[in-house]
Image (tube, rainbow, N blue to C red; front, side, top):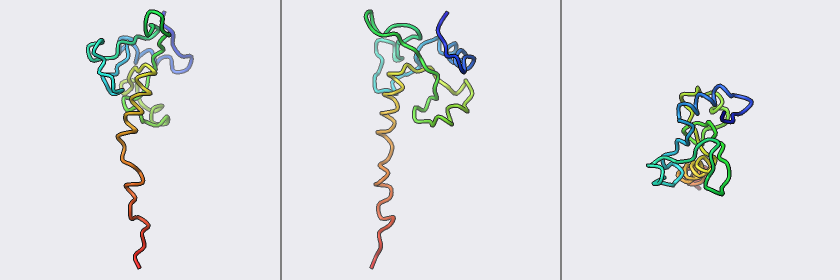
Length: 113
C-alpha cells in the first residue's frame, strides 16, 4: 500500500490514481525530463536514485503559484501530482516570469509641477 496523508486522503488518492502515482511535471520546472519521456520520472514512495531519498508526491494545482485558499477549493480533476522538487522549481520559474511590480507602477505617484 502506498503512503497517503491523514487529511484529504480521498482527494490525494484520486489525484495519484489519475497520474499513475507519477509526477505530472512536463517541464514547468525547467527540466525537460528527457529520461522520463518528457515527464518527470519520480513516483510516489519511490526513490530519487539508487542511494537517494524517498519521493512523496503532493496533490497541488497545475498553477504552482495558486494560493493555498484557491488550492483548497479546487476539485481533484484540477489538481496534479507533483514531486516537491518539480513543484518548487516550477513556482520559482513562474515567479521569474511575473512582471516586476515596481515597473508596473512607474509614474503612478509622479506629480507634475
